[in-house]
Length: 198
Image 1 (cartoon, rainbow, N blue to C red):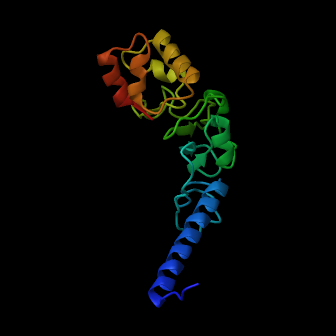
Image 2 (cartoon, rainbow, N blue to C red):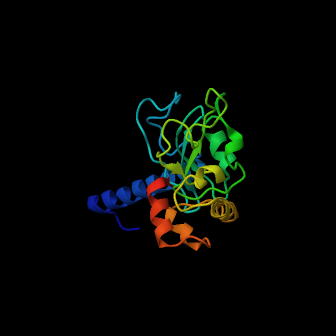
C-alpha cells in the first residue's frame, strides 16, 4: 500500500470529522421531542435563558401554545398530534383554564396557535363577546361558534360551518383556508382577516 502524503491525511481526517458531525446531528434530531424554542416560556427551568431550534423530520409540526397553560411557548410535535397533545406538552392546563371552550380533539396544523382561554371571575371565558376588549383578535385554532358569531358578516350558521370545517380538516393554519367554507365571500373574508389570527 502506498504511503499517504500529509495533505491526503488531512483531507481524509476532515471528511471523517464531517461525517461524524452529520451523523451526530441526525441522531440528535431523531431523539428531540422537547420544545422547539425554550426562551420566553413561563416555567421553563432547563433552558438556561437561551433558545434553540431543534431540527427534525419534515413530518413534525411546530405550534404555539398560549393562554391558561403551565408553560406557554412554541413546541415541536409529531404529525397527527391533537390540541390535547399540545396542551400536555406545555405542562397541562392551569387551574383557571376553560377547556370546554376549545376542541381538544382537533388535529394540529403546522404553524397553528393553540390558545387555552381562562375562566373569568364570573365564569365566562376571557376574550368572549362582552368582556373588556370585544375587538381583540380571536384565535382561529380555538374560536368557538359564539366568538365567531361576534364578527360582522358572520351569523350563527356560518360560524358553525367554520368550526365544523376546522374540525374536519384537522385545524386551520391560515384565515385564507376559510374561503372554502360555503357562505363566505370576499367581503366576509376581509372581516375575518381583521378579527382572526392563526
